[in-house]
Length: 172
Picture 1 (cartoon, one colour):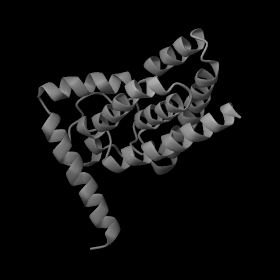
Picture 2 (cartoon, rainbow, N blue to C red):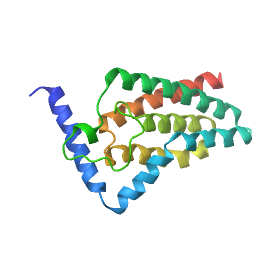
Picture 3 (tube, rainbow, N blue to C red):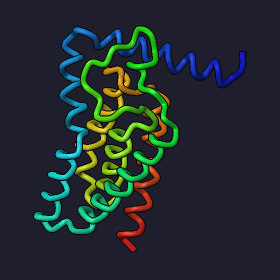
Picture 4 (cartoon, helix red, strand yellow):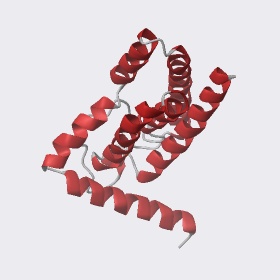
């Protein structure tokens, strides 16, 4: 068995376990709510609040990374066309409706990590709130059957890179 096949099977097995854990429990409702916090309106509101509070560099970096992140993950999803686990992995059920058709990478995770990295650069105390939220958002995606763990890891790596680049360019 090749390493790629073993990796895919491990990814699928972990997704099935996480999804089964959340199904029909308190955790399903909790992670649906957490996942919805990762939707665009929450982040747009945060950016607006930061701008109104005079944190223009942080708000600018978040807005720029948000737009770039949106274009990046949409392009990657169109190119890779990886089906969501709830559509392609037996035993995985979508516990909430997906926002789009494809799985790779996790846009929710990408944005949560990017915004947390930016907050850490400009408003460190805000990162204390956003870091646990970003972790919960990332965890929610495979628990809800919407992403494989590898989608989440890719989204986190892209988000961290985007957050660092945005912070450095805005701070310069």
